[in-house]
Image 1 (cartoon, helix red, strand yellow):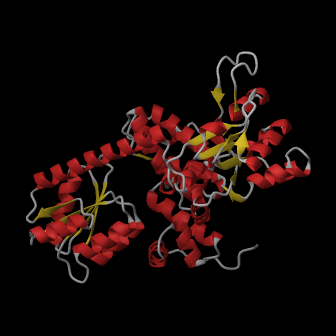
Image 2 (cartoon, rainbow, N blue to C red):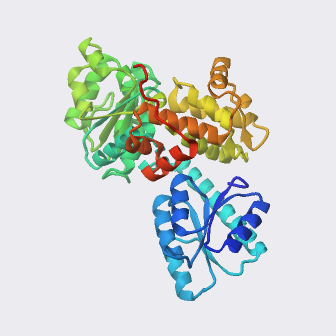
Image 3 (cartoon, one colour):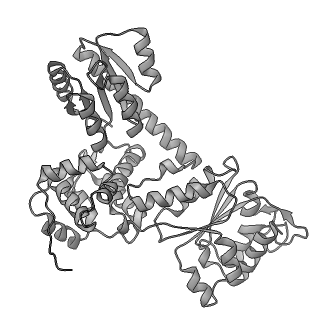
Length: 456
């Protein structure tokens, strides 16, 4: 986060508002202003802000009330309280309610510049530490799952509700939809979060080695078995085991797996005695297991043991409203990994991504953003740096013509969502992740009208 930092100034005094906006814009930040708390709250609902500078004393809605409501909407936004009536009590109260700091009027430009710079550096460092910690520990929770899609939010909420049970879970979905990330979130929200999470790919090894990988082996069990090896199931004792691409395991191993699940114990290859285990099984597949069962390629009894609870992840083409948020997340991620300072993606490039159907889903999108960031020469990823197929770029140009502005893209997107939902305002507002009043205001702003009498 640098000069692309978005700052909202909320103050009922025009001269203070104007001065703050001018000073911050001179420092290169993106700044907008609101003349009262109600307008500020509306703008916070409409857009994501990094920082809000809020006056303490305002009519009808004061700074502390706005602070409380704003943090409920955007917990990650930093709020700086500005006051001409500073006391120890008000300062302590503001900090307790989540304010980052406070300034006393009249504010000096140098003081503001230093405070904002310090805040940005602190925020950037915190994000880097949080990211690196997650990469090291893989401690992902449900708030790490990114989606604005109402359907995906329902899926995540259902997954969270069943996480506390010990029931086995089967996660369905195409490759690249984030099945392992969901499995880790389920484990970390379960009753056994301090236990191990062990992931096994069922397609990474041949059948002969996979059985040893699952259950381990005793020394001398077979050629090259020079020492005792504990299998993944044994290593997962007290935690969860994630069996990725479970639909690809061979029939013989399916039987061994069924026995392990039913008896809650395993026997190492070459071993004589059973080893009791306490584990929760989370399996995933991109295959149609019901069809595989009907065709005799997958054991029916094993299918029902695994499929106590099923969760299906949507492909990215069915939740394209998530693409902008995912792109923003990946830019932040690769800024840390690649030591880059890319701030955003151009409207033209983002429009092209929205046109593509992403057969490789979120993983393919992540790879596309990483590749673009490696070759990006400036702080903005441009269309030519995405290396998309010419047909995608051509189709995008036809749809959007010469106007690539954010306002035009927003207008087109809102109209598309309204048309897709037969101008159901409540449903469209939920999909757009804004409230009904904001949607009505945007319809009025852009002069949008429902086209009746369309051919079906």
